[in-house]
Length: 114
Length: 110
View 1 (tube, each protein chain N blue to C red):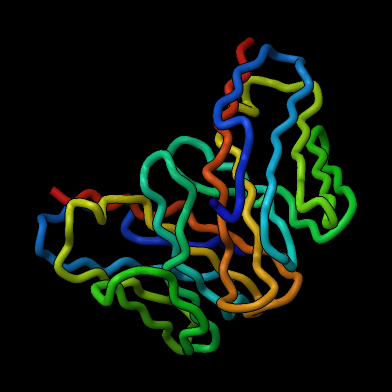
View 2: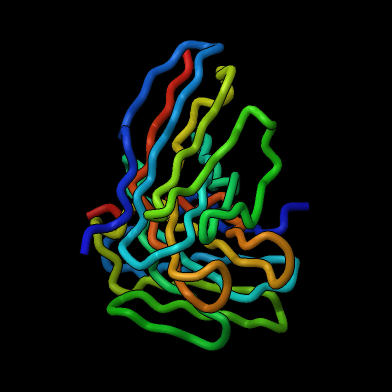
C-alpha cells in the first residue's frame, strides 16, 4: 500500500503565475486536507475535502482553491502567486472526515516564488 | 494567544538522555497528535491520543484532558531522533482540521 503521494516535489514559480499541486491519498482514504507550512512555523490549515465536497476552509485568500476528484485525489490551485506563498504545501489523507482516525501525510511540495 | 503552545522551541541533548517536550492547548479537543518532521519536510504521525498514555518503542506520549496538556517523552535518546516534533489537535466543533504547534527542534549529539 503506497503512502500519500504529492507532486511535484519542488517547484519554482514567478510572482503573478498560477500553480497546481496534486495529491493522491492512500487507497481507501476519502478525506484529503491541505496545509501550508512557512519556514520555521507549524503547518496552517487551508482546505479539507471529503467525498468530493469542501468540508472546511482556513483563513486563506480566494486565490487559493481546491477540488477533489471521484478517485479521491485532490488538486490545490493558487493564482496570482505572491512571494509570501513560498512554503511547503502538505497533503494529509484520512479514512473519514471526522472521528478518531489518524492522518497520513505526504512528503509535501516545496513551492518557491521568485 | 495561540491555541497551542509547545516548549521548548529548541532542545539540544546528549545521546542517552531522557527527553520531554510539552504541549499546552486552550480549547476543547477531540484528539491530540504528536508528529515528527525530518529535514525535507515529510511528516510522520507518531501518536494520536484522546486520553491517558501511549507507548511505542522508546517514545511515550501522555495527555491530561483536564489540564489541557500533553507531553512527548523519548527514552535513551539517539542522534537519529533528531527532528522537529510537532503537536497538533483536532477541535471538537467546526472545520475538521488539525491545529499545529510551532514545533520543537530536537538535536541529539553523539
